[in-house]
Image: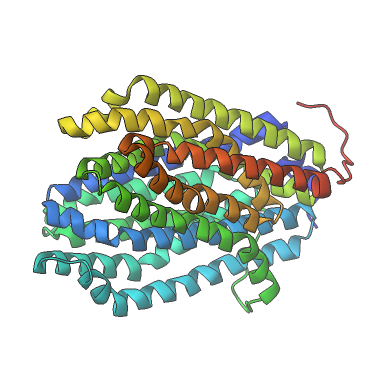
Length: 459
């Protein structure tokens, strides 16, 4: 049995532990944000229909990411809790289930790719080229999704033990491979034929393969605190239930973002196309502020889960407080940038005069949600780490669906477009109040009673 005192999540000073685990994830997610913009930039050079074809498939890609990351969150939470409880065999079993669930998820997406790509793209396509390009892109992405799903499973398994460097290397390998292959396969270079939109999809899948390969290499060849046993593996329903009790709400949380975007676009298009474009620009820009906080989230959750399982209230609350403060600082910097430099930010996208007029007001207004979002994201991490994934789901539903869309409709009728933007910070504020009440309940009933057996000073 693993000696808990040898685990850095039990003994390393909290500030050093949190940042050593978070910084690699933060850097990795910033690289991913950059890759998304560069990938779209290359595809846009093929023409508007090519970019539209890729955009039509984007909801499917969002769903794929939601399933892989959501399952990974549940997996990471379960492994870290079992390690904290010194239940090594069950932690190993959970890690093995991660690979099994990745394969099961792939079967669903591959089946959709084979049978559902044409009906799905056909419902939106307005030209033969758009239909063919969209179908090809969708089929390649979904059938090749096995690599991405396994990559995320391996990544979350290592992160659950406090190992953040290896997953970072795997993510960067995949993103850099994709960026290098994009122009080669799209436009045809170095003997490779020009494959257009299909080339972009193949570059993505090949990048995911290399990312998966690197993560699996580290997982199976380097010393790890958990071990995957595929030989003689049999699925256990209790393990699967435990993974999805946290993972399923996370899947839904990420999936509802696309629903919110569709709803907001439907409201904004009633004002102008520029309003829709500005909303899209905001989401690209805010990713560079939110991604570091999500990286902090990835580093914080295994610390909270481990020490919750180990019944160490002191370390758990110290990590949570430090996480909230750090997230607030990051979001505070983002708020200052959006408030003082909206025109500079918009100029990256070569905006029209109307987009500038709409966008300056929009960026300044929407960015008011940054500070409450920082606290909300960190308290959501606490919910997931303590096996209250559905509370995290409820808060996300409030933030991204239940509150924001009705508020946007009401405000659009009261004061027009300029008031619509306030729906985001208002929804964030109301959701934060709910989140704080939930946090107080969890602390009173589950965290405060913990036996803080390790009496140590705050380091």
